Length: 273
Image (cartoon, rainbow, N blue to C red):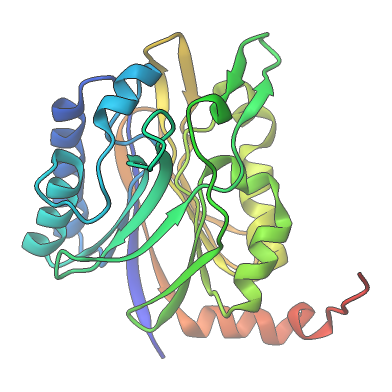
């Protein structure tokens, strides 16, 4: 039986990269002190501001001399923990439209997996606020899974949560843990955040680690918070209170096998299309 202690970090990131990274470093240290072996950051952990600033902050994947990856790599190595840096601007050949990437850093400090957000947030919110992520972000095209400490982990970001076919593919590739670093808006979070996170856990029979941004950000952006970790039965094991913080859960392969044996949906699925 494999076991891992995981942590989901809730942040209220702003448009000051160095200040944001200092907060990340603090919460990674708190998570490490509580025994976490995997620490998952929310989307936009390093920069939550306008698109010009985001383009300026973009880094080439693997360049550990740049601030975002230097901090994530260094913290992973110094604390000997795996860190999922969820939702940061990865430099793209089209410099005007960096990827929105989630990168898993191994305890050695090197990155072991990189996912580029596939589904981009082009919506008009109930408040009337218009979001057009595709105007400033290049979409990825590949589902990403990786092995970590005896578990198979699937990567995704925020708006991906609304597309079950992505998670079905991750499960077909053996995933037992799904990570969804997010900056879910307050409008949509009130209506759908818990519902979607729990649904992805139930239908996939996986643990779901869903750290979220919280509070007010530049550009009149507001995010919902309520970072949570949900088990394969759909039970919320922990949820973050308002404000910055970190929540934990202990995940075992036994807990996953038990649900999949009790309710063998994954074995019963049929390919009808």
